Length: 131
Image 1: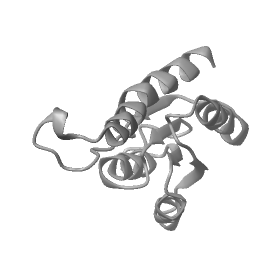
Image 2: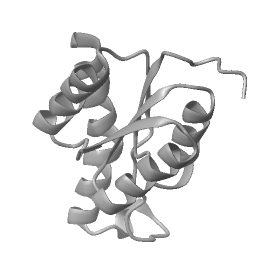
Image 3: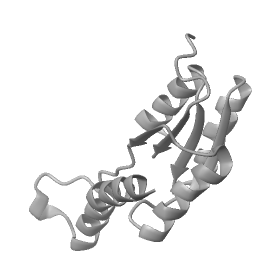
């Protein structure tokens, strides 16, 4: 551990599992205070516990990145909890059900994938930049 992110705050959307969790753990290992934002609460809290068990500091914010109000609340929670935000990793995303062709997706599944993967990224960037 080099502590290169000591006294910094990192927000990781989708930080409750997979690549997002690995990113959150890596930031914490380097000294960052980490905010985990995700829809699945129990997994988010487990990730926070993993960070805290290793001496790090983390906070969980239940967030559906496809909802503007929840994204704004997520950014506000970072500021309230840690006084600001230095890094954001907009990692949240889903694959939907397996389909060989995009045309094979059901419309509801397509909408959910687009809302989280595209609209969610846009909402996060918009909220982070407007502050």
